[in-house]
Length: 321
Ligand code: NAD
Ligand code: AKB
Image 1 (tube, protein in one colour):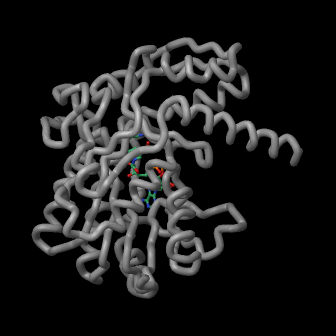
Image 2: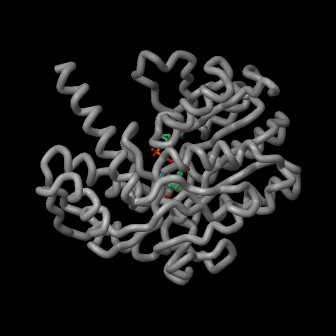
């Protein structure tokens, strides 16, 4: 295998922490440069660099000096935080991507990964098994930036031949890092609340069904997409990707099977409107056909694994104190 040189931007986020570890395993620790706008406090993060994706000169210099062959651009402002600061969300999400695409072309970077989201869809999109090609018309700044970003990726591929690849991740569930200000964050918060106080006050309605995915599946999909030969990639905007779909009431019931005393109540806030405009389930047949995508986890297996790992983490914390 050729010696790849990998740059991860936004590496301290929910996906970045786990994707960086997986990339280090695949390509060697010394070949993966993890960066973020903020500094890493973790001792084991040797080789970590501070990089603001909006600082194009520093970004370009790093790609050159490190001989980067692949960029994973994860820096973004997510849907809920984006509605509180639309200008910042547009700036980071859009200019950050454009800097990445420009630098990749200028410096002949071989592959770029940039994630899109189910946030590209809006109230007019089909709710069930939302197809790959359909009306989008997003109503959040986050969704607008992801939608525009997909077209920019396609444009750089067609115009400059850049090998940029993307998926529309559903809401991602994980236990290793905190979520970063999305509408789907409740599906992580609920586990911490269930373990800590057997109670969760949910900011979405009981029946707000959304497409979701467990992080191991998301990492697997990302690595799979980036490893497939470029001839197999027929979509250069972003692939629909599906894992599971559930509502707050359904995940609460699945948690109650392990923690019977767990209770949930509902106090919907502004995030309910965002969730209500997104599809409930996604048709990912193009990802399946083009690069053999298939998820491993469903609601039951994900809940069991999350609770198992979070219990282990809290026991380790108790032992340390
Ligand atoms: P996150 O908010 O947890 O992490 C984003 C990281 O980007 C943070 O560590 C932040 O410090 C960093 N960042 C912000 N501004 C930056 C800047 N100017 N320069 C450099 N770094 C900066 O987000 P995440 O959940 O890890 O998401 C990563 C990507 O995946 C984003 O593009 C997001 O839209 C997409 N995505 C995530 C989900 C999900 O459920 N987590 C779902 C769909 C798509
Ligand atoms: C969010 O809720 O903003 C993200 C996403 C689905 O893109 N988790």
